[in-house]
Amino acid sequence: MRGLSSERAPVPQDAAGTSHPAHPIPFGRSQGASGSVAGSHAVMTGVTRIFGTAVHALGPVDLELRRGEFFSIVGPSGCGKSTLLDVLAGLSSPTDGTITFEGKRVRGTVPDGVGVVFQEDASFPWLTVRDNIGFGLRRAGFRGAEAEDRVRHAIDFMGLNDFADAYPNQLSGGMRQRVCIARTLVMRPRLVLLDEPFGALDQQTRLLMGDELLRLWRASGATVLLITHALDEAAMLSDRIGVMSSRPGRFIEIVETGWPRDRTSAIAAEPAFGDVTTRLWNTLREESLKAMASQRRVAG
Ligand SMILES: Nc1ncnc2c1ncn2[C@@H]1O[C@H](COP(=O)(O)OP(=O)(O)OP(=O)(O)O)[C@@H](O)[C@H]1O
Ligand SMILES: [Mg+2]
Image (cartoon, rainbow, N blue to C red; front, side, top):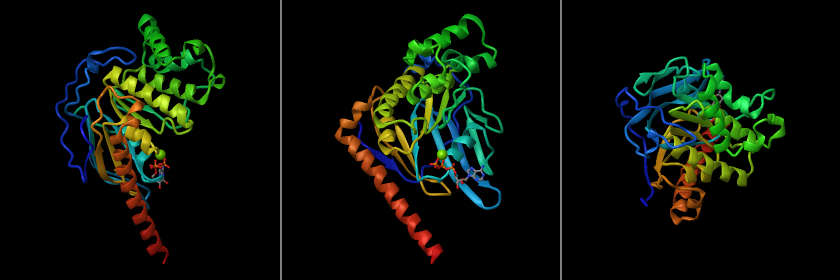
């Protein structure tokens, strides 16, 4: 196992190439699931986001997501993490800077191949689990055997077989979140963006969901960007972790864990796991102290 490494002030690289191999297949084995991590997949260069004239929420941020990696972002509340995700997904436009996905500029709309899982439970209460999961497929025009197959496979993979015909209000919070993740992944995104998907869950369920997410990541070959408040979750799941400053959020450190691809939550028992969480904690602690000191200066 490689040791922990980290870099400050990461230098972005240009997106490499515009072509992409055949769609990876989530919920099963796939061509894209070989586990190789190579080349840039999504790149943010000098991205800032200012709301109105007063709220400088983000940046400038440079970020290069490598194809097939699991990248997490941690940072103080309000530092601009969700703003970064929205901008990267094309859900909102940056004030400055550029974003590319698979070599093409992202502007205004969510590019084909990008899937987003939001923090809040976004399941439709009036649809069954099966129909919730199949919703995006139907909207995208998928019908018949292929759509049914994808939904059946997703239900099976996510352990929801006994609840396929249940409604969201008949499920636990963890199961509802699984439905939301399945609904996104059934579209076979090549880049999955998750904004605190396990925020409302208890610690044990978070661990189990983390393992499920790792399983999906490996099976799909997708690139994953996860935003989380939980340092141990970031440390357990990620190849790299970007630590953000307080608002306006910028990356102050990128920590590379060196975990093997076939990891599980058992990695938390490794001594190196403690090194990663300590590193994250120290960086965030320094940042919080700086933010507190500058607030005091402003107040004084
Ligand atoms: N639509 C908006 N209009 C104005 N200000 C906004 C808007 N969205 C976010 N902000 C502001 O931008 C800043 C960053 O918000 P953001 O939601 O990105 O933070 P965050 O890091 O995701 O926080 P949390 O960890 O609490 O989810 C905050 O000060 C917030 O008030
Ligand atoms: Mg947020």
